[in-house]
Length: 196
Figure (tube, rainbow, N blue to C red):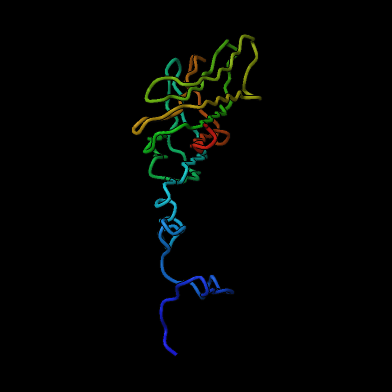
């Protein structure tokens, strides 16, 4: 029995095993992906892996009074497209244009003060404030037992090369440390289909 190409309406093949009976690469023009791996298939079909960054700090950081301090040295990081995220500098640099959801939270450590003060947590896009959350203390409460926390979030449009970081400003009159937990930064690229 010799092998040959099958053609014509009367030639029908059924019950072909897709695991053992199919080999090679099926071109896109024939309904395939033109690839033998998922990563290559995603690229060939014009999709890209969405960026997702979830970072948290496990160490304290000193925030000077009356100046903005960029939060740096994140140690717990979950990253898809990790090349866009620098955990040491705390800067995300977009390699793809798109719409991104960004969330930031800060937990301050104890401070012994009865002065009025303000804490501002900012999400910055290429050095310009894109979102801000604030905590105001206008009373004589001494914040050594229940240190304040602040959150903020936003949706931003980024072009290639745009950066995102988070910063803290406070005017307590002295340097103030973040707590060793409770500070986090999340950046997620939104799928294009959700934007239509």
